Amino acid sequence: GLDLPVAQEIATAAAQGEVCAAANDNAPGQVVVSGHAAAVDRAMAIAAERGFKRSVKLPVSAPFHCALMQPAADVMKRALSEVIIRAPSVPVIANVTASAVTEPEAIRSLLVQQVTGAVRWRESVLAMKQLGVEQLVECGAGAVLAGLTKRIDKEITALSLQTPEDIENFLKN
Image 1 (cartoon, rainbow, N blue to C red):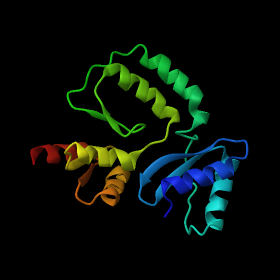
Image 2: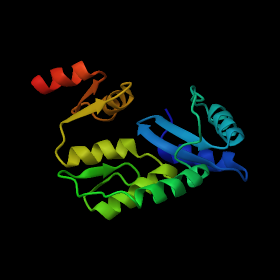
Image 3: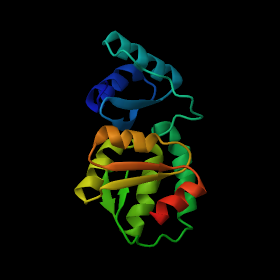
Image 4: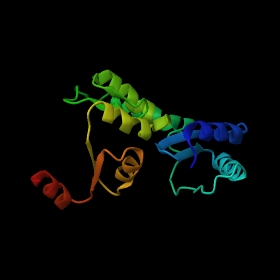
């Protein structure tokens, strides 16, 4: 699988004046590239030329987590300027830095940065482990993060709760 430094190198080679960036460092061997469609296609071709057996074009509605999302980041910044953010009772791991944050203004800034910045999920999971986290619970549609977490560190228990009933059962136990 493709690791982050190689993905960054391929994205840079594929850009050719367009935006192409490593947008998600999901797990060992799984990196997502985002940007202009033609540049992403070139990145996939370069990866194939370099012997990487599998690359998948994701069915997404926008080029998330890259510079092309700056207009959305600007909207997010304006919206968050009107929101009161309180200090969390537990540290929050910012995916854009893969580090713990508790200061409300830092959280606000990092939420804006996340729109255009790469998701550092692999590093975020490792940061949580360093903080003593032993179990991650994913709530919502799908089990992607739980699956990735299991690939990152088998010592961390990762669960996916899909329905209100799943949540109720989890809380009972």
